[in-house]
Image (cartoon, rainbow, N blue to C red; front, side, top):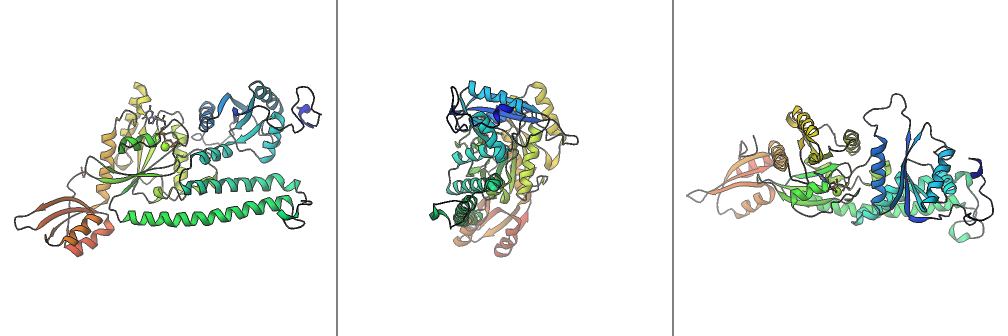
Length: 466
Ligand SMILES: Nc1nc2c(ncn2[C@@H]2O[C@H](COP(=O)(O)OP(=O)(O)OP(=O)(O)O)[C@@H](O)[C@H]2O)c(=O)[nH]1
Ligand SMILES: [Mg+2]
């Protein structure tokens, strides 16, 4: 597309003003593009998502920050062009589309180099953002807690810094005249890098502080004898809906990608009497930039330390396998073994959206996986499968915990208080002579202590051990 190249023509009729890359359309009107590069030989099949599903997701991402999607296209490519990512014919075609729809923004669902971004902005007279930038934008809007806000800003700065290096090094120029921003002779790039670097250091320090506070909170929660059950899963899988169903609380559950950003904790009593702390977390997404994963490591510490992890999957989604593989990757990155059936329970959600045949298939494949690997088909929306899920959680808990029986002098109020604080009291009965017969349940590492202090005896669990 030769005509695009110089872009130096004076502002004529219909031409945008001197800076041709100044967006001319409405900045909330967005054209969504999903470049689909032809399959390379040897590429993993499981990871291949259908272009249509990727387009749905991309439109969802744009909608997540209230952008008005005016057009959305999958663009087939045989190869990625270094200068513009897309071929010149496509660039031109899309330019017309952008103009026709008066869009001020184009979301390209791919990792664009700074040069590609710049060139496309010039060609389309619109702002161009790539996947990382859009996800950062969403995270920026969603973050509520101080830690979340800081982490998003940190990820943003790191993103900027990496782009600064790549985009500007060949354009480095001396900063003339305004000496106060940098030392004499400091180049623009050095100054920018230094400012960003200082800001990063400052945020990292603040984050340290926030993390220390969180660690304290966690430590005090650890004294609570209740196990932590964390929900993880691909964004939009239904974690918050399930969380609400299990807690009967109302956490923001929406058909928005990344509706939940900061972890939410709530105490829940299962029908079996088990008390748990349920934790709702940020959704995962494919191609989540590594710096973002790193930034959210701290937020996901609840997951790392959880006793049980519920991996919520949208089994009605055509890419459910690819999504599950992405979630497994993130878990691995957090140091959690995704194949640890001991800790993980797969929750196959949204079964209400399956047709009769899909239902049968889903239930059959769930039944084929036995023992700890057995997934639980549910619908968080209709409530189907909730009893099975709670039972699965209770079983998992009772299996890992030790049940102890002990007798306590009724005068030992201090001992009784300690037991209530440090163990789950399952049963309490007073004998005729006043002695209290107690049945308590604790994590294995605490059992020895109670055996010694109260002369407790290990027993078979009274319930949930089926
Ligand atoms: N049909 C159906 N829809 C569901 C079910 N569970 C959740 N949804 C819908 O799926 C959408 C996403 O649900 P959320 O609970 O917000 O998903 P999430 O996993 O918390 O998403 P993020 O917080 O963005 O990661 C909402 O529109 C829910 O109403 C289900 O069992 N069946
Ligand atoms: Mg959520």
